[in-house]
Image (cartoon, rainbow, N blue to C red):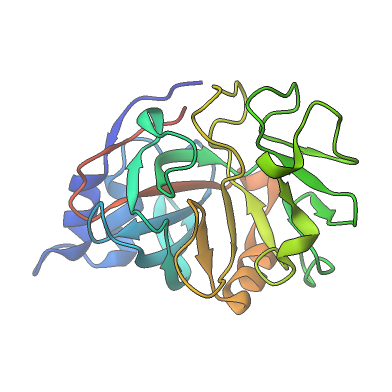
Length: 232
């Protein structure tokens, strides 16, 4: 599952340096790996300890990345950390390149949504119990080996999870203790516990934009590029 490391530093500096290429040609084009699809979301923070930055979504057209939209983004309350070194419960957002397995929400899918979309119900949980066989998975109902105090009752976050994407961090082959329940979702009142969040309107636009056949991914990193973009 590990893809080749890509220096987010070079990509970000291309996008930000005076006199360099404009952002439309900069950030995705500078990445060594964008997941192999023709849609990409970049979530960029100015530095590792930042709790806010910019989320941009891009289309690959004629061999060039073109910006489809952007929005202010929020990150974990304790900033960002390299995905392979992250520890659960640290309130950090994992950097790296990740798939977007499916979308979900407490609300109905916005018009135009074509990605798989799962509606949150009263018995919908995201298991974060390291001892459970369902670790880092959606469950309905919550299984007996998944403690409620170690998990998220999704319906309890009606605003934040009105619209959301599962970020494929630690998802395909979960490593216990690395972290669970990392999403792209609607803003709450401040920084996140490790997710990436944007305004509700931006989430609606992203859901209407993303297409399964175009294999959208999300790349999370810093402007200084202290961490390589690698998929885990």
